[in-house]
Length: 215
Image (tube, rainbow, N blue to C red; front, side, top):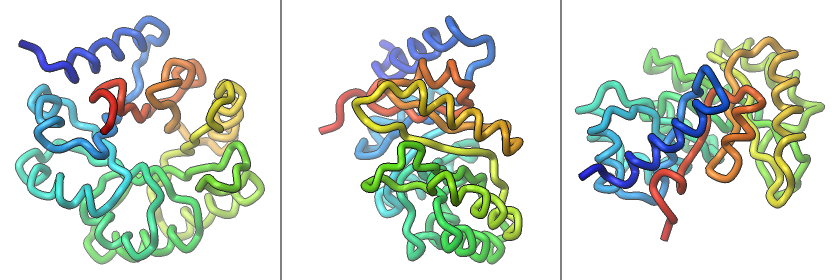
């Protein structure tokens, strides 16, 4: 019997394929779920998984990654500078870079262990006071800081304001991403991933639509 999460993942892929000829990567957001809930997807061959807390990720993924070398772990939550050392050791992607201080710390830690982390800059596209992300007027300086610190910057990440149509925010992020010459774009979650695909997202961060409702 096929596990529910595998069925959900394949249904998402079918829905994306119906509107896109080139499907983006799906980051299965496994935060709060236990490895026993995630294992069917690992066994199925899915490799991209997302977590938003460093400590939770350590307890869940440290041993699993040792025996599954292909797995790519994505840090999608807010990252504090005092957690960067551990995050760099465990994660392969960080989607939530939003300050020069964080850029410098990531650069320092990855050089210590000779590892290159793939980076997205989180932009506060809705200018929301309660939300992380760099403001648009400070974006260029942060991009330059990534270059100066030899970070592998892939592109931008955004989380549109809740309870608003995300289309305008996705479009604005897409245009900014293109104007800065980036090819990768981290946009779209369970509620809006099809719209994100329409605006050329290349990484979708999907959790509940794959694993079910969190408890």
